[in-house]
Image 1 (cartoon, rainbow, N blue to C red):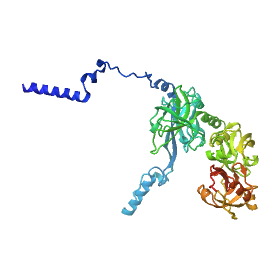
Image 2: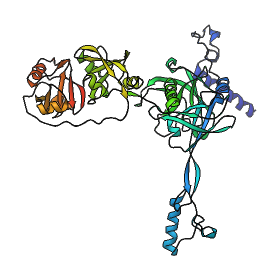
Image 3: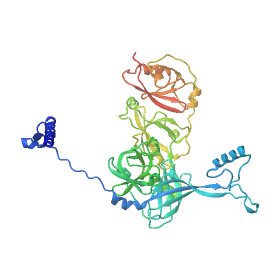
Image 4: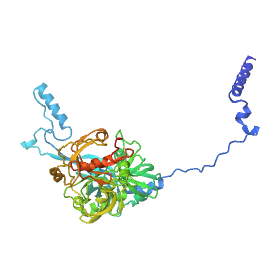
Amino acid sequence: MKKNMCVASKTFSVKTLSALLFGTAGVFFAPTMLGLAPQAHAAVPAVKLPDFSDLVDAVGPAVVNIRTTERLKMGGPGVGMGGQDEQEMQEFLRRFFGGAMPTPRQQAPRGGRRAVPQEQEVQRGVGSGFIISADGYVLSNAHVVDGADEVYVTLTDKREFKAKVIGADARTDVALLKIEGGNLPRLTIGDSNKIRVGEWVIAIGSPFNLENTVTAGIISAKSRDTGDYLPLIQSDVAVNPGNSGGPLINMRGEVIGINSQIATLSGAYNGISFAVPIDEAMRVGEQLKKTGKVVRGRIGVQIGEVSKEVAQSLGLPNAKGAQVSMVEPDGPADKAGIKPGDIILKFNGTPIERSSDLPRLVGGAAVNGKSTVTVWRKGAQQDIPVTVVELEGDKTAKKGAKEPEAQAVNALGLKVSDVPAAKKQELKIDAGVQVDDADGVAALAGLQPGDVILQLNNVAVKDAKQFNALVAKLDPKKPSAVLVRRGDVAQFVALRPSAK
């Protein structure tokens, strides 16, 4: 009897708790019984995740593992793997036992002949690549094969070939290899200009020497500038050490990039990876195939970005183009008449959206051929013909001298004087003013004694008197663009004059 009562009591307690928490049991479990219809929601189409298996079956055989080795001489004292540890052990034996036990490397061979050093091939690194032609041309990264004595390419069917490095270009991180084979599997080359942010892509490679590893993700951004020679494709595909040189492939089975870099704080994948666009990689590969090197053009200018304030001050509709900060003396641009302070808007008719666009366009132009540079100078646009020459070494800017002759402080916080004739000749300028002292907004912007001011907004500066008169008329509500030259480098600085 007590047992039944306990059961009844337990059942009642549960019902009571349910009523307290949810009201009536009928309302909680069956709202339609009281005439309450469920809230209507708009139909959302089901999204089916992609299946990459057929794609991997089709393209996988053309992706290769790349193993690099180097030759080390073995047989000399302290030479080879473990040589330093061995020397330390010999020193330990000498100090505590009065001598050193001979090692196999030190024991004299029979017959009293001296041991001849031997070369031993040791593994240097592992990367990835992919075949682009049936006769065995392979694309990879330049850093994968850099410094290697031998390069071995292994296919998915375990065939291994010794590869010849046709050429490597460090600026784009592209390398072209050749293996001797026929009717080899190859990848279809896509168009990296047609990729779309958000589309699915896969990477195949050998991360941590795990051959033929497939990872997937989406394109995160196009034309991502990373400070290198060309813009890269950004994706969230997992890429780790060993993936370098492997292909980035779209859903049509076309290679659109070469996996090259990762953004990381740990050294491993952090959610952001970068690939060299295949269009650029193929252009580099063609040059490497023909000549073994890449020839690029240059015009001899140092450039920077155009800020919004500078563009507004110069009357440009947008903050686009490349600001010329230095012109190499007697270089192609100097001979053509390009000057520090010019804003390069186009090269051979192609607009310069960012300053990083210009080196790529000039680099791809015909060497020793004529090109047209469109510049913005003193409020007007003009075309200047320039002869492009081959890119060699970078020029180092020289520092300018200081020859002050103080005048009154103006609304920009500047004391200026006429530029001495000797300095004009040194800098190859006809006019301008020299900064003798900088205070207020000028000092905050980084101007310093010895700087030379060549232009104020769109007006060329002739002398101190004219410059101070121009400054006196400036609107304190608007920033003004001052073209400042320091040594061989010139740059626009946006300054807002102090109120009178």
